[in-house]
Length: 355
Image (cartoon, rainbow, N blue to C red; front, side, top):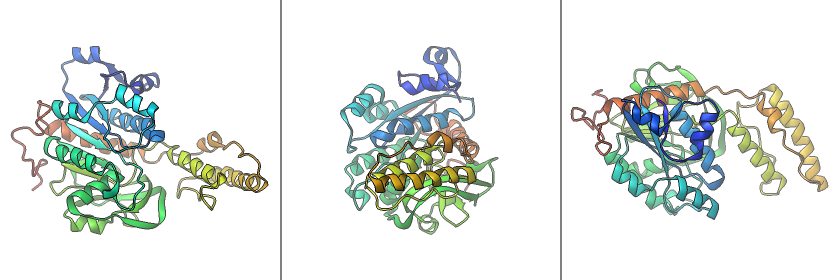
Protein backbone atom coordinates (compact mmCIF):
# COMPACT_ATOMS: atom_id res chain seq x y z
CA UNK A 1 0.00 0.00 0.00
CA UNK A 2 2.03 3.02 -1.19
CA UNK A 3 2.02 6.15 0.90
CA UNK A 4 0.79 9.36 -0.72
CA UNK A 5 2.54 12.66 0.01
CA UNK A 6 -0.71 14.62 0.16
CA UNK A 7 0.72 17.34 2.45
CA UNK A 8 4.17 19.00 2.80
CA UNK A 9 4.92 16.85 5.88
CA UNK A 10 8.76 16.50 5.73
CA UNK A 11 8.82 12.78 6.51
CA UNK A 12 7.37 11.98 3.06
CA UNK A 13 10.41 13.41 1.24
CA UNK A 14 12.75 11.83 3.79
CA UNK A 15 11.25 8.38 3.22
CA UNK A 16 11.40 8.84 -0.55
CA UNK A 17 15.10 9.73 -0.30
CA UNK A 18 15.69 6.50 1.65
CA UNK A 19 14.18 4.45 -1.15
CA UNK A 20 10.68 4.02 0.29
CA UNK A 21 7.75 4.09 -2.15
CA UNK A 22 5.88 7.38 -1.71
CA UNK A 23 3.55 8.63 -4.46
CA UNK A 24 3.12 12.29 -5.26
CA UNK A 25 -0.46 13.51 -5.00
CA UNK A 26 -0.52 14.14 -8.76
CA UNK A 27 0.52 10.54 -9.47
CA UNK A 28 -1.98 9.16 -6.98
CA UNK A 29 -4.87 11.06 -8.54
CA UNK A 30 -4.09 9.46 -11.91
CA UNK A 31 -4.46 5.95 -10.51
CA UNK A 32 -7.81 4.18 -10.23
CA UNK A 33 -6.96 2.60 -6.88
CA UNK A 34 -8.84 2.63 -3.62
CA UNK A 35 -7.65 5.06 -0.93
CA UNK A 36 -7.38 4.45 2.79
CA UNK A 37 -7.30 7.42 5.13
CA UNK A 38 -5.49 6.68 8.39
CA UNK A 39 -5.33 9.05 11.33
CA UNK A 40 -2.22 9.17 13.53
CA UNK A 41 -2.98 10.69 16.92
CA UNK A 42 0.53 11.59 18.07
CA UNK A 43 0.66 12.31 21.80
CA UNK A 44 4.39 11.90 22.29
CA UNK A 45 6.44 14.71 23.87
CA UNK A 46 8.38 17.19 21.76
CA UNK A 47 11.62 15.20 21.78
CA UNK A 48 9.89 12.09 20.42
CA UNK A 49 7.14 13.65 18.28
CA UNK A 50 8.91 13.48 14.91
CA UNK A 51 10.56 10.08 15.35
CA UNK A 52 7.28 8.51 16.51
CA UNK A 53 5.53 10.06 13.52
CA UNK A 54 8.24 8.60 11.27
CA UNK A 55 8.13 5.14 12.84
CA UNK A 56 4.38 4.69 12.47
CA UNK A 57 4.15 6.22 8.99
CA UNK A 58 6.98 3.98 7.82
CA UNK A 59 5.36 0.94 9.43
CA UNK A 60 2.10 1.71 7.62
CA UNK A 61 3.92 2.35 4.36
CA UNK A 62 5.75 -0.99 4.55
CA UNK A 63 2.50 -2.95 4.34
CA UNK A 64 0.93 -4.54 1.24
CA UNK A 65 1.10 -2.43 -1.92
CA UNK A 66 -2.62 -2.48 -2.80
CA UNK A 67 -4.28 0.76 -1.70
CA UNK A 68 -3.07 4.33 -1.58
CA UNK A 69 -2.45 5.32 2.04
CA UNK A 70 -3.19 8.85 3.19
CA UNK A 71 -1.81 9.29 6.72
CA UNK A 72 -3.16 12.26 8.66
CA UNK A 73 -1.10 13.15 11.78
CA UNK A 74 -2.93 15.17 14.43
CA UNK A 75 -2.72 15.80 18.14
CA UNK A 76 -4.95 16.97 21.00
CA UNK A 77 -4.94 19.72 23.66
CA UNK A 78 -3.48 19.10 27.10
CA UNK A 79 0.01 18.16 25.91
CA UNK A 80 2.83 20.54 26.78
CA UNK A 81 4.47 21.93 23.63
CA UNK A 82 7.36 24.30 22.96
CA UNK A 83 6.75 27.19 20.57
CA UNK A 84 8.87 25.47 17.93
CA UNK A 85 6.96 22.17 18.15
CA UNK A 86 3.62 23.95 18.15
CA UNK A 87 4.62 25.78 14.96
CA UNK A 88 5.50 22.43 13.39
CA UNK A 89 2.12 21.00 14.41
CA UNK A 90 0.28 24.06 13.12
CA UNK A 91 2.07 23.77 9.78
CA UNK A 92 1.95 20.04 9.12
CA UNK A 93 -0.74 18.44 11.27
CA UNK A 94 -4.48 18.24 10.65
CA UNK A 95 -7.03 19.25 13.29
CA UNK A 96 -9.35 16.70 14.88
CA UNK A 97 -12.29 18.86 13.82
CA UNK A 98 -11.23 18.59 10.18
CA UNK A 99 -10.79 14.82 10.41
CA UNK A 100 -14.17 14.44 12.07
CA UNK A 101 -15.65 16.34 9.14
CA UNK A 102 -13.78 14.42 6.44
CA UNK A 103 -13.79 10.99 8.09
CA UNK A 104 -11.14 8.29 8.62
CA UNK A 105 -10.95 4.62 7.72
CA UNK A 106 -8.55 3.71 10.53
CA UNK A 107 -6.83 5.37 13.47
CA UNK A 108 -3.54 4.77 15.27
CA UNK A 109 -3.08 6.31 18.74
CA UNK A 110 0.45 6.57 20.15
CA UNK A 111 1.61 6.49 23.73
CA UNK A 112 2.37 9.59 25.80
CA UNK A 113 4.43 10.68 28.79
CA UNK A 114 2.54 11.07 32.04
CA UNK A 115 3.29 13.17 35.11
CA UNK A 116 0.41 12.39 37.46
CA UNK A 117 -0.48 9.40 39.67
CA UNK A 118 -3.55 8.46 37.58
CA UNK A 119 -4.40 8.86 33.91
CA UNK A 120 -7.58 10.77 34.77
CA UNK A 121 -5.46 13.55 36.26
CA UNK A 122 -3.55 14.14 33.03
CA UNK A 123 -4.48 17.38 31.19
CA UNK A 124 -4.95 15.39 27.98
CA UNK A 125 -7.42 12.91 29.52
CA UNK A 126 -10.66 14.62 28.48
CA UNK A 127 -9.48 15.56 24.94
CA UNK A 128 -8.30 11.96 24.49
CA UNK A 129 -11.69 10.64 25.61
CA UNK A 130 -13.39 12.94 23.11
CA UNK A 131 -11.22 11.65 20.27
CA UNK A 132 -11.73 8.03 21.31
CA UNK A 133 -15.51 8.39 21.64
CA UNK A 134 -15.74 9.79 18.13
CA UNK A 135 -13.44 7.13 16.68
CA UNK A 136 -15.31 4.20 18.22
CA UNK A 137 -18.48 5.25 16.41
CA UNK A 138 -17.04 6.54 13.16
CA UNK A 139 -13.80 4.67 12.36
CA UNK A 140 -13.57 1.08 11.11
CA UNK A 141 -10.75 0.10 13.49
CA UNK A 142 -8.58 1.82 16.11
CA UNK A 143 -5.07 0.62 16.95
CA UNK A 144 -3.79 1.69 20.38
CA UNK A 145 -0.13 1.70 21.37
CA UNK A 146 1.22 1.39 24.92
CA UNK A 147 -0.30 4.18 27.07
CA UNK A 148 -3.21 4.60 24.64
CA UNK A 149 -4.11 0.97 25.41
CA UNK A 150 -4.06 1.69 29.14
CA UNK A 151 -6.13 4.85 28.68
CA UNK A 152 -8.83 3.24 26.56
CA UNK A 153 -9.13 0.21 28.84
CA UNK A 154 -9.56 2.59 31.77
CA UNK A 155 -12.20 4.58 29.89
CA UNK A 156 -14.19 1.58 28.64
CA UNK A 157 -13.79 -0.96 31.45
CA UNK A 158 -12.44 1.01 34.41
CA UNK A 159 -9.33 -1.19 34.40
CA UNK A 160 -6.45 0.27 36.39
CA UNK A 161 -2.99 -0.47 35.11
CA UNK A 162 -0.57 -1.98 37.63
CA UNK A 163 2.78 -0.49 38.55
CA UNK A 164 5.60 -2.93 37.84
CA UNK A 165 8.35 -3.58 40.37
CA UNK A 166 10.89 -2.93 37.63
CA UNK A 167 10.52 -1.23 34.27
CA UNK A 168 9.62 -3.63 31.46
CA UNK A 169 12.43 -2.54 29.20
CA UNK A 170 13.98 -4.59 26.46
CA UNK A 171 13.12 -7.13 23.77
CA UNK A 172 10.97 -10.08 24.80
CA UNK A 173 9.88 -13.31 23.15
CA UNK A 174 6.14 -13.71 22.49
CA UNK A 175 3.81 -16.46 21.31
CA UNK A 176 0.53 -16.35 19.44
CA UNK A 177 -2.36 -17.57 21.59
CA UNK A 178 -5.08 -17.40 18.90
CA UNK A 179 -3.41 -18.68 15.73
CA UNK A 180 -6.60 -18.68 13.62
CA UNK A 181 -7.41 -15.01 14.15
CA UNK A 182 -7.44 -13.06 10.84
CA UNK A 183 -5.10 -10.41 12.26
CA UNK A 184 -2.46 -13.10 12.76
CA UNK A 185 -2.74 -14.74 9.37
CA UNK A 186 0.59 -16.06 8.03
CA UNK A 187 2.82 -14.62 10.75
CA UNK A 188 5.41 -16.33 12.92
CA UNK A 189 3.94 -18.19 15.89
CA UNK A 190 6.80 -16.93 18.04
CA UNK A 191 8.48 -13.54 17.68
CA UNK A 192 10.06 -10.67 19.59
CA UNK A 193 8.52 -7.34 20.64
CA UNK A 194 10.26 -4.36 22.29
CA UNK A 195 8.69 -3.00 25.50
CA UNK A 196 9.42 0.18 27.42
CA UNK A 197 6.99 0.85 30.27
CA UNK A 198 6.60 1.04 34.03
CA UNK A 199 2.99 -0.20 34.08
CA UNK A 200 1.02 -3.14 32.76
CA UNK A 201 -2.47 -4.44 32.28
CA UNK A 202 -2.38 -8.20 32.71
CA UNK A 203 -3.81 -10.87 30.46
CA UNK A 204 -6.24 -11.82 33.22
CA UNK A 205 -7.50 -8.24 33.49
CA UNK A 206 -8.09 -8.12 29.75
CA UNK A 207 -9.82 -11.49 29.63
CA UNK A 208 -12.06 -10.56 32.57
CA UNK A 209 -13.24 -7.55 30.57
CA UNK A 210 -14.20 -9.78 27.64
CA UNK A 211 -11.21 -9.00 25.44
CA UNK A 212 -9.42 -11.63 23.38
CA UNK A 213 -5.67 -11.81 24.05
CA UNK A 214 -3.89 -12.66 20.81
CA UNK A 215 -0.20 -12.42 21.69
CA UNK A 216 1.53 -12.98 25.04
CA UNK A 217 5.13 -13.05 26.17
CA UNK A 218 6.54 -16.39 27.25
CA UNK A 219 6.12 -15.10 30.82
CA UNK A 220 2.38 -14.53 30.21
CA UNK A 221 2.48 -10.75 29.75
CA UNK A 222 -0.09 -9.57 27.18
CA UNK A 223 1.18 -7.68 24.16
CA UNK A 224 -1.76 -7.72 21.74
CA UNK A 225 -5.50 -8.01 22.32
CA UNK A 226 -8.73 -7.10 20.55
CA UNK A 227 -12.15 -5.86 21.62
CA UNK A 228 -15.00 -8.36 22.07
CA UNK A 229 -16.06 -7.85 18.41
CA UNK A 230 -12.51 -8.99 17.45
CA UNK A 231 -11.57 -5.95 15.34
CA UNK A 232 -12.97 -2.53 16.21
CA UNK A 233 -10.16 -1.88 18.72
CA UNK A 234 -6.68 -3.44 18.61
CA UNK A 235 -4.55 -3.07 21.74
CA UNK A 236 -0.72 -3.15 21.86
CA UNK A 237 1.32 -2.90 25.06
CA UNK A 238 4.66 -3.23 23.28
CA UNK A 239 6.29 -1.11 20.59
CA UNK A 240 6.32 -2.93 17.23
CA UNK A 241 7.05 0.42 15.55
CA UNK A 242 10.48 0.74 17.22
CA UNK A 243 13.63 0.83 15.13
CA UNK A 244 16.58 -1.39 16.00
CA UNK A 245 18.27 1.54 17.79
CA UNK A 246 15.21 2.94 19.63
CA UNK A 247 16.01 1.21 22.93
CA UNK A 248 19.67 2.23 22.54
CA UNK A 249 18.65 5.88 22.37
CA UNK A 250 16.55 5.42 25.51
CA UNK A 251 19.55 3.78 27.22
CA UNK A 252 21.79 6.67 26.17
CA UNK A 253 19.27 9.12 27.64
CA UNK A 254 19.25 7.22 30.94
CA UNK A 255 23.06 7.21 31.06
CA UNK A 256 23.04 10.98 30.58
CA UNK A 257 20.47 11.33 33.36
CA UNK A 258 22.74 9.36 35.70
CA UNK A 259 25.76 11.49 34.82
CA UNK A 260 23.74 14.68 35.43
CA UNK A 261 22.56 13.45 38.83
CA UNK A 262 18.95 12.97 37.71
CA UNK A 263 18.96 9.29 38.68
CA UNK A 264 20.84 7.60 41.51
CA UNK A 265 22.15 4.46 39.85
CA UNK A 266 23.70 3.69 36.50
CA UNK A 267 20.98 2.25 34.23
CA UNK A 268 20.88 -1.48 33.50
CA UNK A 269 21.03 -2.69 29.93
CA UNK A 270 17.66 -3.16 28.20
CA UNK A 271 16.89 -6.85 28.65
CA UNK A 272 17.63 -9.32 25.82
CA UNK A 273 18.85 -6.47 23.61
CA UNK A 274 22.64 -6.24 23.71
CA UNK A 275 24.64 -9.16 22.37
CA UNK A 276 28.13 -9.95 23.60
CA UNK A 277 29.86 -7.28 21.51
CA UNK A 278 27.40 -4.52 22.41
CA UNK A 279 27.54 -5.53 26.07
CA UNK A 280 31.33 -5.26 26.10
CA UNK A 281 31.28 -1.78 24.58
CA UNK A 282 28.53 -0.59 26.94
CA UNK A 283 30.28 -2.00 30.02
CA UNK A 284 33.60 -0.40 29.11
CA UNK A 285 31.86 2.93 28.64
CA UNK A 286 30.12 2.55 32.00
CA UNK A 287 33.45 2.19 33.80
CA UNK A 288 34.74 5.32 32.08
CA UNK A 289 31.56 7.34 32.69
CA UNK A 290 31.41 6.43 36.39
CA UNK A 291 35.07 7.38 36.82
CA UNK A 292 34.62 10.71 35.01
CA UNK A 293 31.54 11.53 37.09
CA UNK A 294 33.42 10.82 40.32
CA UNK A 295 36.29 13.02 39.18
CA UNK A 296 34.00 15.83 38.04
CA UNK A 297 35.06 15.56 34.40
CA UNK A 298 32.68 16.10 31.43
CA UNK A 299 30.73 13.10 30.16
CA UNK A 300 32.74 11.33 27.43
CA UNK A 301 31.04 10.79 24.04
CA UNK A 302 28.59 7.87 24.15
CA UNK A 303 29.64 5.05 21.74
CA UNK A 304 26.26 4.98 20.00
CA UNK A 305 27.47 4.09 16.53
CA UNK A 306 29.81 1.38 17.81
CA UNK A 307 27.00 -0.31 19.75
CA UNK A 308 24.44 0.19 16.98
CA UNK A 309 26.51 -1.92 14.57
CA UNK A 310 25.91 -4.93 16.82
CA UNK A 311 22.14 -4.56 17.28
CA UNK A 312 19.58 -6.86 15.66
CA UNK A 313 15.98 -6.09 14.72
CA UNK A 314 14.07 -9.30 15.50
CA UNK A 315 10.54 -7.90 15.31
CA UNK A 316 10.10 -5.76 12.21
CA UNK A 317 8.96 -8.45 9.73
CA UNK A 318 6.25 -9.68 12.09
CA UNK A 319 5.22 -6.11 12.92
CA UNK A 320 4.85 -5.38 9.20
CA UNK A 321 2.80 -8.54 8.70
CA UNK A 322 0.37 -7.68 11.52
CA UNK A 323 -0.10 -4.11 10.27
CA UNK A 324 -0.55 -5.46 6.75
CA UNK A 325 -3.29 -7.82 7.97
CA UNK A 326 -4.95 -5.02 9.93
CA UNK A 327 -5.02 -2.59 7.00
CA UNK A 328 -6.07 -5.35 4.61
CA UNK A 329 -9.11 -6.07 6.78
CA UNK A 330 -9.91 -2.36 7.03
CA UNK A 331 -9.70 -2.22 3.24
CA UNK A 332 -12.20 -5.10 2.93
CA UNK A 333 -14.69 -3.78 5.48
CA UNK A 334 -14.75 0.00 5.27
CA UNK A 335 -17.20 1.92 3.11
CA UNK A 336 -16.05 4.00 0.14
CA UNK A 337 -17.48 7.03 1.95
CA UNK A 338 -14.84 8.05 4.53
CA UNK A 339 -17.44 9.04 7.11
CA UNK A 340 -19.15 5.63 7.00
CA UNK A 341 -17.18 2.98 8.91
CA UNK A 342 -18.56 -0.18 7.27
CA UNK A 343 -20.06 -1.52 4.09
CA UNK A 344 -23.81 -2.06 4.34
CA UNK A 345 -23.45 -5.86 4.54
CA UNK A 346 -20.98 -5.75 7.47
CA UNK A 347 -22.24 -6.24 11.02
CA UNK A 348 -20.39 -3.70 13.24
CA UNK A 349 -20.74 -6.06 16.21
CA UNK A 350 -19.13 -8.90 14.25
CA UNK A 351 -17.22 -7.25 11.40
CA UNK A 352 -15.03 -10.28 10.68
CA UNK A 353 -17.99 -12.70 10.66
CA UNK A 354 -16.47 -14.87 13.37
CA UNK A 355 -19.54 -15.41 15.54
